[in-house]
Length: 493
Ligand code: ADP
Image 1 (spheres, rainbow, N blue to C red):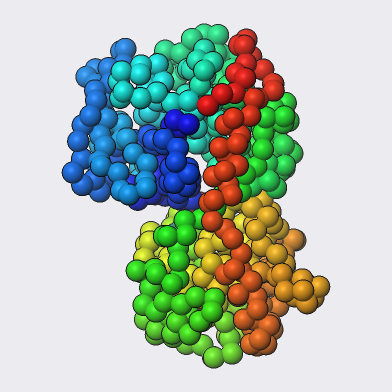
Image 2: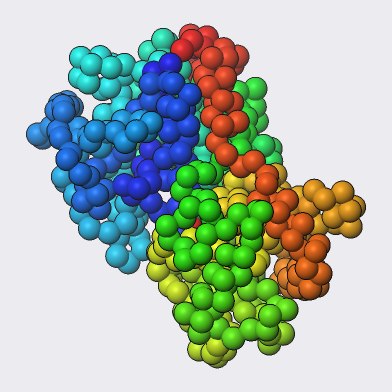
């Protein structure tokens, strides 16, 4: 199959979160299964600076757009798919984050920027001569690409798939934006992209795609409820026959403690010596004190409400006074950043807080920590708990979304049959989190039991192979419900 992935980020070109990891590793897994896969992302300034031997291979002229969009690419690495970067300086050649400005506010031209990305994808579908290639499947990711499906609704020979990585980001803009983008009036309906009198990019993807997927089976169910449906639960229930959850995998080359170039000592499930050496070295570097019989706790993530960092902040003073050392890496909400820095100042030697984005340190934390804390309010899939298990770092997670689907709780029964991989708490309170931490400390003191827990996580298969196949199967399955006003696509590929 010829598959085009369209997204707003892909590692290593640009990454702000798990989306970038998925858009790197899913296409690669599909390419390795011998499909013809291409990835289209914006040519942000930061992404272009990472290109080596880049060439402009095409110019896309779009009606009403001054100048043209260049398509940049580089010779693909062995086994990797070709990546195309849509280069239009006024939209993407600027410093900083892909979505927000220095003050944390969304760029005020986000609708225009990502609509442009959508139009480039549409041009690739409509004009085979442009890149001498035309996809059988267009697989779009998150709201930034939500307007692709409505614009190719007439292309019945192309399978349209839309993956929701996080329903709480929807791309909502005023009616005036809809008008200025020049969209056809017939899209301004409840069955189109109108949402409470505003324009919704994500609705475009959900309404007009043949298949909607999300990144874990539990999240696929949760988004059909009013609790986690973010106002779209009704629409998602309506499309339930064409909605399913496919669990993300992780990149086994990028995240492998036996070969990871970011960590000082390599190790594996059969030889765990390197893990304790990483812990000792990192604790020294991070100026952390701690007793040998006490686990080192780690947290990595965006400092936003979703990640339950407020719960951790509430629990931290108590946990630190119990003598549990912590390392925290993240950036996001300025108030949460300040709070964490305050806690660090009040507890020298007990907690190391690094505010910022640091790929290398994230690997080092996974290698050095004994326990990874991920108390998310909701979590579509989550990658860090899987990286943790692969690194023998036992996760403590809240019972939600992909966390519930990937971590097997350390109940006495699961421990006795050796299938437990972590700690799961269901009540979303600082008390419940503290109890889970206490439970992990107790189990840590039983070296044999702990090793079994680590090894069980390390030996669980979180690779992409299974999920990549599940997507390929989906592309070939005829979708059942109809798209408004259109003859629906009966599959293909
Ligand atoms: P989300 O996509 O909601 O941010 P995920 O757990 O799916 O959450 O993926 C987060 C990814 O981003 C992981 O690869 C994680 O290691 C990385 N990450 C998040 N914050 C940071 C940071 N401050 N420094 C380095 N990596 C980070």
